[in-house]
Image (cartoon, rainbow, N blue to C red; front, side, top):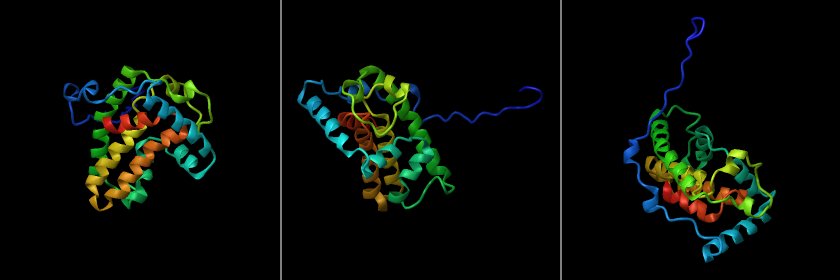
Length: 197
């Protein structure tokens, strides 16, 4: 407090798990494929092929999907869910997604730090759908945090609205694949993110 003014901070939201209860990603998340392996070669081929999407509708969706804030994710799922959670009062759904995300994000950071996989645009320069920040460039590619978050939202929202499951899971899958279209992840990064979720 300064000059009698009290500054309040938003509460830190904790996940459902205590730190010691979080799963060990090294047990269930396989390493990314080696660059010279069949899967590593396929990853690079998909990266190269998706550069042809530059400027098209799928490219634009990928650029839009780069925003990962909760309100943005709510908007991303509004068509498949049938409601924009960002525009309605849904405290139980918001709490569920926020707390589950709080459990997921430390796993994403730990696994990225563990594998330290370079992003595809650092290996081979090509058009991207966004201008990568220094933070993005420094961060590892494997697993994809966007794919993990999008798939987590899809899995939970499909449980909340089972009559929309197919559409919700389709949108969650497309959200992760946007990172490949954008050129900031390999396809195996997306699979790793889904596994982590």
